[in-house]
Length: 194
Image 1 (spheres, helix red, strand yellow):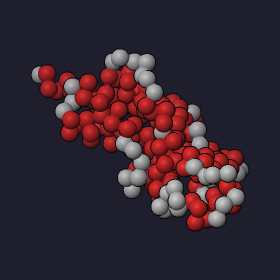
Image 2: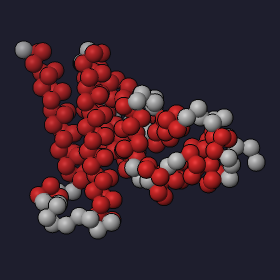
Image 3: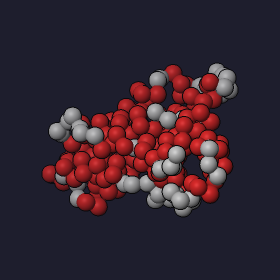
């Protein structure tokens, strides 16, 4: 059977979901695909490039059609979609965060956030900064959420190390921050009208 790059990405995602990012090694991946580790390098020059392709697969739903026509609805929808993409895979937020930091993933999701901010009335420069701000908010919030989920499943969370922060559910906390962001954009745009 001939190995294709999609097979390699599929195998990497299976390992990510079963074992987590720390155990996603080229050796383990090659073993799961029944090939020598060198065979993987025909498709990806290094592990970082492979992780970029995995991140692109995780973020693929960011390109789907939006339901909202209004900028704030689009920003909210995209932020929730990004969070859902990240939560769909074990360590998804950590992997995507690392690939964004090293510029190994596409920027289509961030670009869609910037486009919504431009529709709101921001300049291109402001829209890019706003998109990065929201992207890093979603990544940070979701990394924390996934870490807590894993700690809870391992029995590591107790009342002593999980105080008031956990009295509201993760989606409510996420929505609160998202609404602060959207209100901040509205305020910025409103100051120009005066």
